[in-house]
Amino acid sequence: MNALGRHKVMKKEQRIRSILVVGACSLWLANPVAAQDLGGWLKRTVKQAQDEITHKAGNKVKETVTRPVENALDGNRRNDTGIAVAVPDDSDAARDAVLARLRSAAPRSVCDDASTMSRTYGTNCNSREFPGVPMLAAPKIAWQTKPGWWGAWSPFLVGDLMLTGSCNNDGNAGVSALDMKTGKTVWRIGDICKVGNRRGTTGNVAFHELSTGEVLLIYPRENGEPGDYYVIDVRAGRIVRSLKPAANVTLRGHGGSFVGVNQSNQDGVSYLIGLSPALDKVLWRNGGFRLAMQKDDPHYMPTFSPSALTDGTLFITARSKDQSEPPTRQLHAIDLRTGQTLWRHVNQVSAERGWRSDDGTPMVAGGKVVIRVQERLRALDPRTGSTAWTTQAVSGQSIGNYIAAGDMLIVETGRGGAREVWGYRLADGAPAWHRSMGKDTRLLASSGGVFQLSERTAEAKGGGRDYRLQGFDARTGTLLWTTTLPGHDLDFDGGWSIQPDFRRGGSQGPAWRIGRDGAIYGVTLTGAFKLQ
Image 1: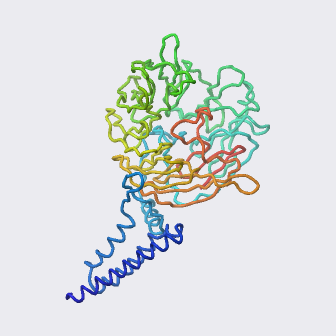
Image 2: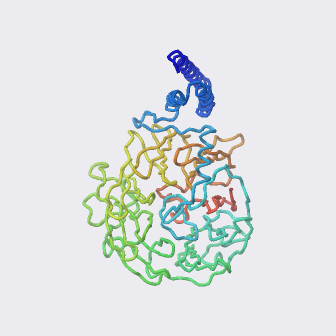
Image 3: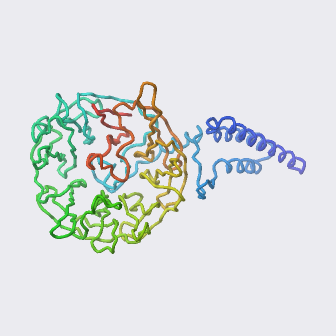
């Protein structure tokens, strides 16, 4: 091509850029909502321009036209936090590309967890990531049942059955097994409501998986007598035996293995205790923890946090008895077989007047143990306790819930009265994307690399508020779908925080789970439902 030809091509490039930039600015000023799809429109326009220029001048000119526009759209932007981070692209083209990637992705192992039943927070890793397929489209109600319950128990998924129920109703009282495909009752055990003054109460039950393939149902009595540990044969739909723990503890199940926590005022320590699968033997005691703090202490936290388990190591935060004053909770790695403390996290950051940051509730994700230290997140090597990375603090930002989703850590934050969601890479803790959300938005759970957010809508005429449920790609933050669910009797904003909601009693957890089929199975105040 001669000099005159090259000059004409360059002039045409400049005219195209000017038109695109002016058009983009005008659209943004006129209608910010419509401009959300600007990325896809610009790319399609650029492609048309590329084809025309390439036809005349070759691929070398194509490269100079494409890159300046795409960099303006897709490059990292330094926002008011001072951190360079990408803005998610919600265009049709970006969404289609994400869906194609997710559909072709091979199934991945979420966690070192051989469970065949559901966990309250996904897996033993406590990461809010369920071992299910991604939800790629807005879910709809597949079935809903209302057997007359009032205050149903958080569901437990076993094979093709969903276990739930209530004693707070006249008919159909007890634990019920519902067919996950149809919602129809397969069997019901009503006798458990007839003892211990349970009739007419909601109770605070806990379901656990046993190594035998059976289910352990722990149900306290309302008359002060010891609670019951029922072993249920889920195939036959009946109680086959009862267990009696060898120690008076608050029990925590880990897929056939059990630990308990209690404290001894006589010994002056709190204990973490390992129990046999049948609960009839104490396998070990670890008494390296302080007694509980007084609840009127402004720094009060429960002695032991919820725990996470992977590769035979239990991760739990607690106050060590050999900490200097004033003590706070540290992350401990415990050998689940022997109860031996393998390592403790002592590199905590200063909080106030001698206090150190609380390590909060641990989760295992991406081969690392993740905790919150002050207003940062920290990942540790599960074998050694060495720090892998710590996120950069943002001035004025508070960290709320956080979940794992594929190779990402999704974090809900608050800053200046606004709510935001950040995506961090689990590999190195670097921020990958960031987006602003409504003030009533809550981060929920994930499966297959897709995570969900819920937001309470404005109150409608006549009262009542619905839920706006949305699904996002974890890697890019791209919005995949949006739907609205009726708020009456539903609960899509409670129980998912990494810090336990003590109003819920700590054992039942959220009102729904994600099945291995990617569907949501949940309970309302009066019944149960499936969304798919």
